[in-house]
Length: 402
Image 1 (cartoon, helix red, strand yellow):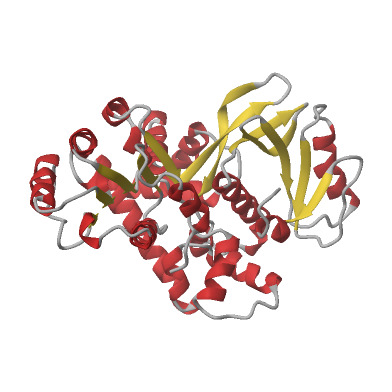
Image 2 (tube, rainbow, N blue to C red):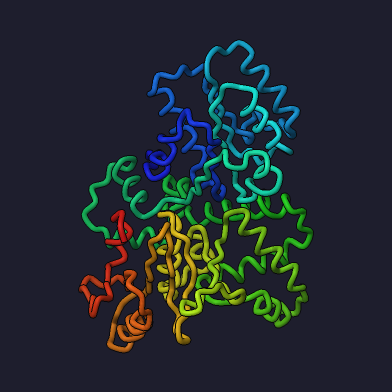
């Protein structure tokens, strides 16, 4: 597996520092490999292997640990003869009931450095947030970016990269889920279905004790089918009614929340750019990896929405808070904020004619502040005009700046 520098660079400066390092991300996004990379970095720094404990709660060795008391008993045995600072790397810790009690106790009682992964964004909710308030650093892990996809092809597959367009076509079709890169193309969609079913059953249905799995699956399919489109719980309710199925708005909202907490979907709220307020209806939803759309629908005619999904996740990966903008009844695909920086982005497949060019640029032109405004498309020609910038999507994805 490749070294994922984007995440390792964040972690390396925190090694031996007090904050508990908490890494969250959808199942199979590479959290275990990242922990192994951290373990390797610790060894490279001269730390003895005897002081490093990488504990996966999905391995046969540790999967019988069900609660914090059993975890404490295990840790006591593991460290009883260890001298010096201890390094704990806990993988998929949400499988241990009340795990936060143990983690906080280790922080208080032991000379240790703690790293945690989990497939649920609720890791920092309620009691955990109270116990370690101000003492943790969270990293959101995503599937391979296109840049990492290229890195994998070069370093693991030993490929000579001659044609980025061709490689991007493969990325569009199969996405960036790390384990998928080892699978033959003919088997990738089947494997994606297996990943989807595992996320569905382990991280959502079982965790939240969902009984009507068929209804939940239909709702999630609706979300996947409508990536990058505005819709609400009422839209889903009407769709289900048309299908001859009745479900309450509250249940739909619960199902959407569960899917968000499992890091499978991301919600982008709408923002009134002039009024500077968040609008609490008709949000957009995006998939953590667009391959889940492709595996179910494979609709290349929806390439615009797929590109929008790719750009959205890339912006999250780069640390932006991303909302959907509205100004004078015009939609701005993404309003991106990081620290005091703000950028506006429109995403299009091709600026194929004057009508499309006018549609994408004119909406940005209505915004009267001095922040940068971009149109991203697959075009090779630079359409920048009147201070509004145009960039090729592949160039954007393979550089570290917007």
